[in-house]
View (spheres, rainbow, N blue to C red):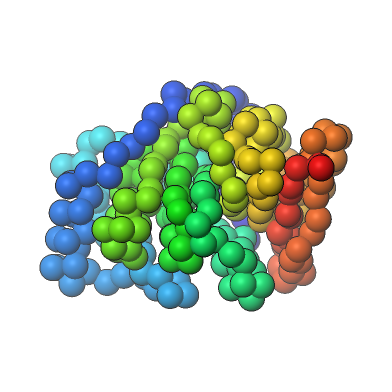
Length: 265
């Protein structure tokens, strides 16, 4: 169930976009994690850093650069506008996308992929494991990329796979010019805030090839914040650039769907 533990004020705060480099620090931290036999969480065929370990890193005195995430963890919150956008949690619709890709045998071989609002990076990691030519991961928080996404990619990859990756942090409004020419864009649970719809559509417009496809996985309604799959799809259809189709629907709990978006030819 999607939840928020504080009032949402609708503020729009744009953070500067920047690329985060995979470094020896990330590789060494993953190796230390393995050497210390820390437990990993398994999602399908993939291994992810254990959340309790991440929480310990964030709250440790040595991790002052993660102060903003520390405040979020103390609040037990899923979202703090302008500070944190939910990247430490694996959302239900991400699992829907993974199951859909596997069931329908969606092809990634040789394609350039963007995992937009990546969080733990499961969608991009899946694309890498299925032969994607390149995968770029984007999250609002650089801290999430440092602590979660990059280590998870290393845990599940090899030098050849990790060499195909790039990582970008920041607000969508500052990133549209940095992200280019993708065959597939994957995004899960990113339409909860209607204030960001125009930015999200701009990313779609400026980064997707004419032959490309976008998969948007979302709940029908995001109670407390106003996001709605119906309103987002309506906005897409108002722009003659796009066509849409529903390729998955679940009525368990809050209704969820996967929307396939592609250029109107």
